[in-house]
Image (cartoon, rainbow, N blue to C red; front, top):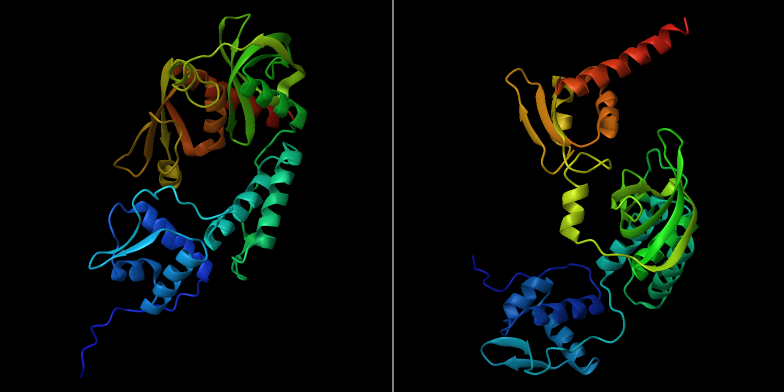
Amino acid sequence: MRENNSPTTHSRPVSTLDNIYRLDQILKSRRYPVSELTLMDELECSRSTLFRTIEMLRDRFEAPVENRRGQGYVYADGNEDFELPGTWFRAQEIEALLVMDNLISRLQPGVLDDRVAALREKLAALLDKSTIKPSPRFPRKRFRVLPSHARRLPSRTFELAAQSLIERRQLRFRYRNRSDGVESIRETSPQRLVYYKDHWYLDAWDERKNALRTFALDRLRDVTIASEAARDVDAKVLDDALMPGYGIFAGEAKAWARLIFSKERAEWVSEESWHPDQQGRFLDDGRYELVVPYADSRELLGEILRHAQHVRVDSPEALVREVTEALQATSMLYQSNK
């Protein structure tokens, strides 16, 4: 039997333009000449296809490709800034853009619809003109985003918040507290917008309270951009002030909650990220212990009650009392309906 020492060829169905794009990226990423065998392997093509791709890259796009005998192919010295003309995407990149388009359109309906629509039109025009097309089998409609308990957010509120953030101008608004319904006028220096659990929040410096605060965008009313320049808060200061505690009610952590989950929920919870500084371990009996820092118990309380009989708060005592009172109030509510 004759041994076959020839390079392995591939029958990967790609377009010539796709190969040109990939060859360009390979040559740009290497400081030294790349051998024929390496290029054939990375492009997954035959020698004849490689030569044809190199020839087209040189002739059609005037790329400065040099063949250094005995070494391989490389872009000529001084031509490292060569760029293929126009906007150039591989088929896989176009498919990725389509997935992103699909997800963005479902992320928060109504928010920035006009802006996103313009981008979608440009993407559609690009696809129409491009000779590189997504695979006919590409499952465009098989990706879904299902928002959970998303609240209605006027697009104008988001636009004003984003505009003040970018232009570094103060933002004024009337804010209604969700817990007690109390309204107050706020003058703020926006620092960043945060998308958290299907809701938008604004981290800002409250000029009247002289402190950092987080505001739910859907609670903002009568929003206006002021002429005064917004003050800048260092990113580390923001993180130190708003990130240590659990969830959106962040701030300097005041306590650590020790939660014990049942065996039925142990594996599920062990794979969840509640907080960057959380500590977790499986107990000998198969239950799971999770320890998380928190500054405000409101959101943490909701998460605990979500697991109902599958979680027990071990400490601190103040959180144990809160959970107990919430469960008792719920029990009384059902008993009163009998």
